Image (cartoon, protein in one colour):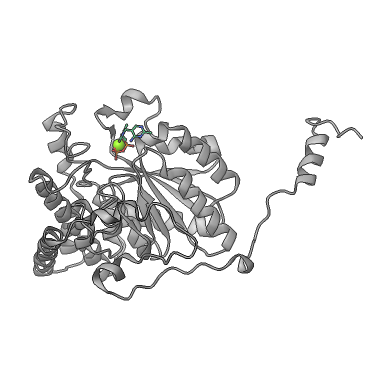
Length: 377
Ligand SMILES: Cc1ncc(C[n+]2csc(CCOP(=O)(O)OP(=O)(O)O)c2C)c(N)n1
Ligand SMILES: [Mg+2]
């Protein structure tokens, strides 16, 4: 029998998946109208991964991902108008219009980007997890990346180090089977990314990324495992992007039949059906959510449309942080809302709970194993 999920959880999952879907549909429309410049990668089809993950985590666990990144902050309560404004290159965007679609950074909600270099976020995630371990702050870091990033050197280097140091990080592969126009199976002898965990002696497993409840269960379990100090996890979410790689991709490398087949497993109607049939939530509640989300996204587009361009005087601002510069709190700056800002302990308050092997011990062990000659006097 399916476990009983609280009604609030099911509705929140539905709301957030639909919020991302609607946001992305309107972003696609705005792109074709010439309102968005540069790259724009849509997350349509993959919503269950980010939503199931966020629902399974604590609100102050870190999340970061690649350039297909509008959905991550939306799951955490970021302002859709400010994200849309960022896509439009407007001054009211999360990064004052200077980051654009690929670099949504929302510190308030512990969503730390948005990175354009394939695999570039993976070592950063290990750094965050190292900081959590060092400060004993109990946080888990979730690092989303595409399966094509698992063929980058940074992936292997990071997993090696994260495993050695038992870092509390979930490496969450959004395995949508394509890296731009290349099917992953064509360029990888082992396309099941989770199997690569064996090379680092860490936990690795697949999950159905088209089912939000399955992602939720898997991430909950992995997060508890990381928090217990058992080390990193490689979670391989099998998912699918319905649209091209980016807005400029006609997606001629896969058949229409394949896409139509995958769309039959759409995670949004699947959850709605489950909630109506199993949890007996009336259809009318979903209709109300649909209407509310549509109105919010309409307002977001209007807000982005009416927002000003950044001034040319600002061209050289926010490039370097100078000592004493005040922190920029995007929602406070743009919407005047009081924002809780994450606080970190100062260096003198750090509680280091584990030590790397002391050098003397390591040298002694090497000598015993005959690997190292004693230093000559
Ligand atoms: C280091 C690097 N190499 C190449 C590119 C060009 N590039 C951008 S996206 C991409 C494909 C990545 O695919 P995947 O990691 O599966 O993520 P997805 O786009 O499917 O979400 C490539 C090769 C890049 N941005 N960075
Ligand atoms: Mg991919």
